[in-house]
Amino acid sequence: MNKVINFYKRNLKEVLRDPIIYIFCLGFPIAMFWLFYIINKFSNGNTPTFEVLSLLPGIIVFSYSFVMLTLAIIVSKDKQTFFLKRLYSSPMKSYHFILGYSLVGLFVGLLQTMVCLITAFIISLISNVGFITIGNIVLLIISQLPILIVNIFLGILFGTIFNDKSAPGICSVFISLSGILGGCWMPIETMGAFESFCRFLPFYPSVYIGRIITNSTNALGLTYSFDNIAFLGLIPIFIFTFGSIILTMIAFQKNMVSDK
Image (tube, rainbow, N blue to C red):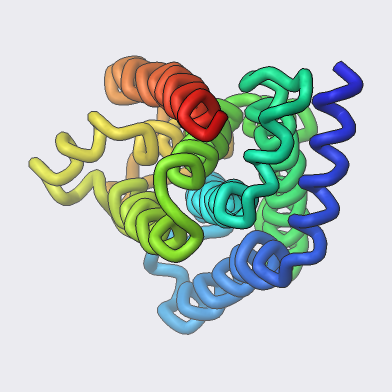
């Protein structure tokens, strides 16, 4: 366990020295909250998706995609600079490396979640709307852990497979997909077949479940509830969660063996 902790501390220092965590992982979600709040205010509050409690799960899910980018960059750089190759000769196993990287992703993701919650709470005070209870906050954090894990392991996977130049480009595609296909700021429930397609990916179901917890209202004027969409949405969430973990372990192990 000491090997994992020491590797985690090293990775955390590398991440904290990188401006990307402050610009994209922390600053960008805050800016998005305020942007959509201003848009909603000047549109007379006629956009339910832009209401603070509806935005909260969407921006949390979207912000996690930058965790993927952060990990992809650090893993690909470690591979490119031969840092990992030198460590492969140590007694560390592949799961030590993966855990060391994933713990950093978990730290950044939970930090993002707290930033989003604090920002949403401040906006709710300014706009004079109610906020969710402590119990629902805890439930919201727990409900979004699977999609955070997906982004963490996809980041490690892309960093393992691609170099430090192509990995960020691949991640940018998934960042766009997370925002568009997750319905983070779009009323996907009004888009018919497009909504049906989004149900097969983990982004939209994660946002949907989050909006159930925050008791949000969709563009059709209906309150989100744990219906068939939410229940069936658990399937792609868990498929992508376990699939990303397994693929990352296989890819990292193969890369480790080939570099040795």
